[in-house]
Image 1 (cartoon, rainbow, N blue to C red):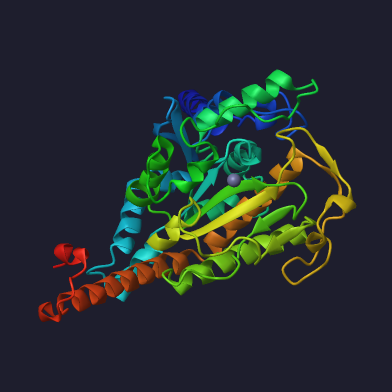
Image 2: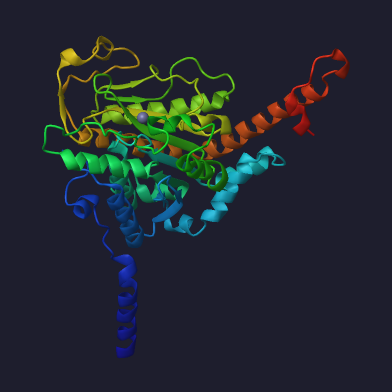
Amino acid sequence: MRKKIFSFTGLLLLLLPFTLIAQTTPDEFLGHRVGADRKLADYNQIQAYFQKLDKESGKIKVLTIGKTTLGKPMIMAVITSEDNMAKLDTYRGISKKLRDARGLTPDEARKLAEEGKVIVFITCNLHSDEIGSSQMALEFAYKLVTGKTPFDADKVLEDVIILIAPTINPDGQQMVTDWYRKYVGTKYEGGRMPWLYQHYAGHDNNRDWFMLNLAETKAVTKVMYQDWIPQIHIDQHQIGSSGARLWIPPFANPPNPNVHPLIWRGVALCGMNMAYDLQKNGFKGVQYGQEFAGWWDGACDNTPWFHNTICLLSEAASVKVASPINIDLSEISKSYIEKSMQFPDPWPGGWWRLRDIVDYELTLSLSLVKTAYLHKEDFLYNFYKMCKDSIEKERKASRMLLSFPKSSGIARPHSECSTS
Ligand SMILES: [Zn+2]
């Protein structure tokens, strides 16, 4: 009997490190609240916090997805249930099978959609001085692994695999943070850096997504199209200060006709759920359906449409890096004061802080995860359907090219060489 009690106690002691490890909050780790006025986490701290959370929880795993132009490791966290974490290769495999729809019957695809997990990819801080999302990522990860979410996180993480890259330009994130810290408290506080935050491209690092010249673009593209094949992606940005507090999809006209219409419906579904979740939590000044169109195809948030990934963009109003600003209503343009169907609850003006950006982005990011969970099988099955339609469309185009009469005297398009 005595021996039995000892064994039980021993077992408890053995399990203790795995069951009772407390997850450090980002606020404790940084020594200030995430998004506090004039405070920023730099890339070194962001990496260290994610690594710490990885050690403290089985629901998060930090991966290195490449090296930056200046040689920094680029990190991305995978967040999902512990059961899923043990089978990530299986789920990545399902995603790849659904994408390569050739040879899969609709019934087989339906089964894979039941078995699979929807993969959601969140990219932050592509433009380095749009820094809110790199801070938000810390709290987002913490909330998901500890279940401090507006939904049952354990249940959601059984069906959703989240990938989050806290910055996809770490060189720039560190530069912007160093520069801001150097001048905080002086008359230059919040001023622009006098050099580019991407070594070669500066702000145009978001014009590289069809050329893939930059190391960062290549690393993220490999995640998107080779290693993970997400069904949903969002790229989080900031814009000027005098318009909407937040812009989210659906996109404005015109739609690019080469994009599958189900993409637009999926984008609208995710975007409208975000708008609803933001509104019910009292976030004012959220706009959709205007400004950013579904047309251009060279940026991080829209090239994935052509790979049948539901891809979204968010644009929050900026502060002066981490310094709050006070905006009088007279400084806001008329179209952001009047109510419209796309903008039913204007922001009244006043103080606007980095923490506001974090709160808006946190809410929209968690909303996206929830929508992915609610429509998991639909998103997976329709990913297959869109890919199948794309393959069929290209086959038809190839057949047309091959039947192009040689005697017409018109040169055949060069792409004929690669058709079979
Ligand atoms: Zn941007």
